[in-house]
Image 1 (cartoon, rainbow, N blue to C red):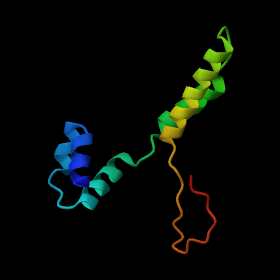
Image 2: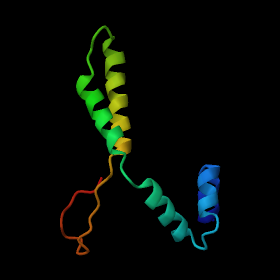
Image 3: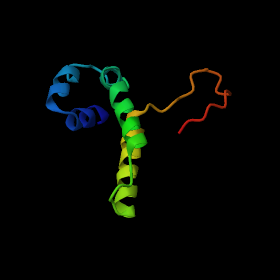
Image 4: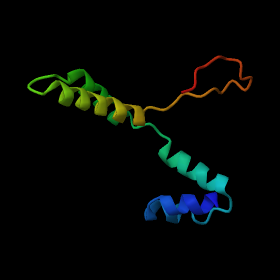
Length: 95
């Protein structure tokens, strides 16, 4: 069921590269390797846009909305940290 869902939600170009995988885990691993890399240039661009964001002639609602959209876009590109200590007592915060 999960394999079918993965195949149906990804674009057709990516679908061809994972359709021959025998297990769902293999599909997921392939997709993770391909898309799990941070887009460093996009992250830098978004951070620069946040720093350069000025109120200018915008209404306060428009300005807050613009800034909020930039922060949301940045959040979508930044990797979420996860614990790799194998002891699970490192107290690393996971969002």
